[in-house]
Image (tube, rainbow, N blue to C red; front, side):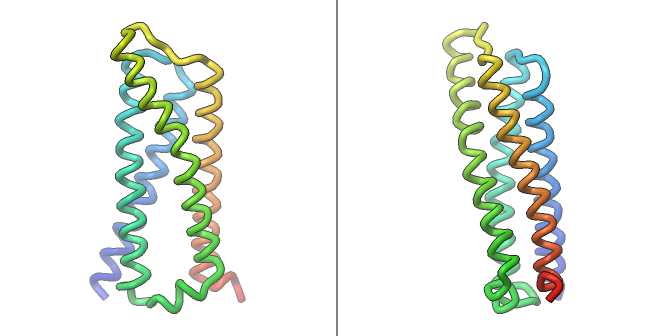
Length: 150
């Protein structure tokens, strides 16, 4: 029971950490770009990646080591939808990560580098869509916990 409690608590904390980093990216992509903002975006993105990986590991531990058991999760269509949404968020996050890495490299070559406004706008839209999908994950988690109300 204690293991399940610790895994559940850690899982929830990681989710809120992930949301916090997405919100921070969204806010930074909305403001004025400069060298410091670009560095912050890169740092937040690294933290986001680490948090997402830990979230996946802890989630899998909950499935295979948690009180509910794998049968609860693996036969629950809401769980599969939740995992699908999580994978989609992960795939969407690849584009901003690649851009942040490119920007960091460009800053090393040219200290006055600033990304194009259109590129920043596209990344902001992607990050905001990721946030919408994370909200969907919360809804799917509630449905999963209640077997979708069936």
